Length: 200
Length: 262
Image (cartoon, rainbow over all chains, first blue to last red; front, side, top):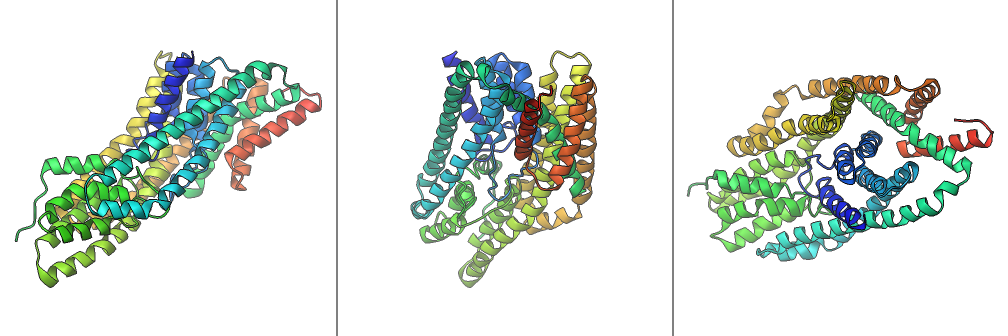
């Protein structure tokens, strides 16, 4: 199972590049990621559900002007990998959201670092050669590595929490988690409805 | 001196490099490094015979630049045409033509971003997501064993068919017609398309809600209706979906603490 999880996290790191860095074909949409990773991890229903829910919850976040709130792609992928590892539904869901938020915070830091080194790169790139291509490649590799580490770290954190604590968690916390998870599709749909209504 | 002509191979190379437009996106130069990387082979064709001009051309494209990733293809076509035109001139005429390139690129980038953001991000993206969800629901209701495949195919094709066409035609028309290609976009009824897609998305959201909530048992259906209604109110008041999830969690804990069952 560990190898399967590592392969899934690596595949998520590659697919996530489509969100901003490469092509933007929407192959990285939560809906697609949930379906693909659900099939890979042997949990197609869980993957579909996470994909649909995170897709709906994130549709109002437009990727304009470097907007970074949370990564629904990472959320859907990580939640589905957790489900494949046998984690209970609510910890998968909240683990996914945590991964999405952490990923966005780190991506913001990554962008600031790129800005700080932008002038030096421009100076090297003016002279020609492969400086610019190498810089783009390094940026892609660093981002994919960051995604891989975030997904693996959240899985490594949530799986033991689920196994050691979740079943014995107070009923109040379980009830709150249950309502939040079961409300998520309807909250997402209401958000999409109002978002469109305001703009037609 | 005649202007260099762009071969189909060069267009493919430019297009492949434009896929990496945001590979080094940063808050200062935005898409500048990616755009410069995409244009570099063409700049070498135009200015390869004059190292100082090639250096200057690279420098002007490494600067701050931003637009929608799909609009970048049209912008690139137009800019390549301008670079070729400038390289075919000499002396003051060349200098005057070069001076136009930077402002033209920035103007096009901003104007096209507004249009493309509204259409691709603000209308087609949510419409394609709802198309995927509705396709999955329909396939599931019809008993198809491949409901997820239908969802993925619907979502990807609704978005990517127009997106890929806009990229290819953008680059092709930008190179062939220059600024006129951008001006001709205003003749398209894009705002009508955007409104139509948003109405369709909104209708699709209601249908998806109906299909999703109808099979639930009485209590769960009531929770779905109440959450949907509360979501409309809270979203209108600016509460983010993640914050709404938190509120639902707190509500569930309060209900449980009061001794009620969900």
